[in-house]
Image (tube, protein in one colour):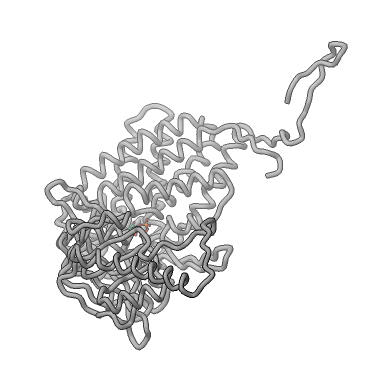
Length: 514
Ligand code: ADP
């Protein structure tokens, strides 16, 4: 909108077409935003816990993903509401910081929004709610610390979890309490059973030797890692070569061959027994390599090359002239392994000079299963890493949330102001996690929660949670269900933050096309 004057000095208003905006104000704005946030949380609620349902998502180009990982579901959902996007961000930040608990954090935020809505209807000012939530979140985070215990990482014993722990321990720097997850490669191949998933001390690359007659097994390999083309320079279109006789053609061809021959010789001179290239080379070059007994692997991706370089202690060579003996990577064994009856082969680079770099090799019946296992492994790796950084844990199955809920509720009584309503609402919101876990496992939610809550108070046992798998005990210590302290604290902090942010919005202005 703009104010202008005509030639006689009379004012008039210019309204630009594209500037027509729709606008929501005050309580309406808050309610609309809360509704959007809640609807995202409702989608994820049924995916929470060991009995959580999977979601099937299809991308515009027809790719199907089946998953129950919160961050992945939201990532693929393609929402266009701004508040819903905030919830997606929320899950993403939990994934980024902690790597696990991405569903729980959204469910918690949804529940906080639901409680806030009730308070708004009772006439409590949103700022008061936000402040009450902030106080409550601090109480909950401190309480979590007080019920946490220490856990020894290497105690974990369940197939996939064990693989994840071993992998993390293999690359961890225990002194500096640091874990570089980039050193763990997760590779999958369709076929076999999930139980065939294994941890390989080394790197696996989904490639094979460039020529079938090259050796399938190289011991004590000295590897040249090239990111430059490994072939004679090709004449570019702007170069002009006049070839009018057969002799000239043959000279040119001879020169090209000689050039490549020199390249191969150079590799041999520096002592390379294997060449791994980022780029390809043509059949002629391939044949020559085979003849000159220099095995090669082509079309290896950049990330993989980097991992190979780290694992074998080699250097990536970007210009052929820079190839020297010191830059070669070393591996005790490089072998090609074939799978089933197919021609599918993969390259195993093992017994590397720098043994820190491992691969988790996932097998499974179909691509979707492998992808979902990759996501589970990612979560497991993150948990194991977090435990090395800080080995404090709280028990899961909703037990930590119930314990916090009781502590926060008790604290509400000590606050004289209006905030006490918000603090109490926060306590109620925490119950959403055990309620959802119970519901998803087919248990009556309210009844189950009431029983467990009274156990907490009567027996003073903060480890009671929801017995989702019907084990027969709801003591989560006996069930060995736990979560990292930092993960749980982060969930509460992040959920509170985003809810406070949503509550503070009292004016929503959007272009009217929406
Ligand atoms: P997230 O993406 O938030 O990690 P999950 O679907 O992994 O979501 O569910 C995590 C929740 O399930 C946590 O509250 C955890 O304590 C609980 N949980 C996991 N395994 C069990 C179990 N065996 N029994 C009871 N609760 C469990």
